[in-house]
Length: 262
Image (cartoon, rainbow, N blue to C red):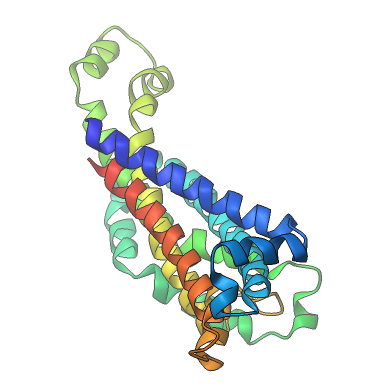
């Protein structure tokens, strides 16, 4: 049990560290940021390292805000639908939701965002494209969380504690609150962590293709595309810094997934 806890703690620390670095890089003045990149040795290989670092901080915070909103939506939808599926009313729908889980979140997200891309900025009105992106990601990834909650609820409902409460006449809502909900957080968070990895892959790839945030600022995928298009071996910061930020975010969620899955 120690190793999973250590992996979860390490993943959380890495995620918090990434957010703090992005926030500080965004708040720091150009002179301060230039001095920090100089201390890190980045200015020696790329004079524009400070500017790239500032752009990467903004892109990372934009992507993390979308991922955070999508993960919350995935967790809420997954919890509610999973509990419905675990009941007698929703049992016939399990096969449908399981088949929806098989469909790749990436393909669903690409389909939704390509349709979104077909509308111009004026048709979107005052709606923030990041809100639409987060909603599409959440709607595409909730079946995974719902099936995890459903499986965990079935397992918890088969315990002796749950059976004893039913024999004593405890109503269904109280049984669910006391004996089922406390045991759902771990499988739910594990499913959300897996979904976050899939959503990151979709978000970064779509950003690289230029369709993730129509009308909005480029995310990390968009910055990575710029780095590839204008790559100069003598000034590699435009490629290295976004790639490093993407790696840190992905590694944090992989550690969370592995720790929660144990």
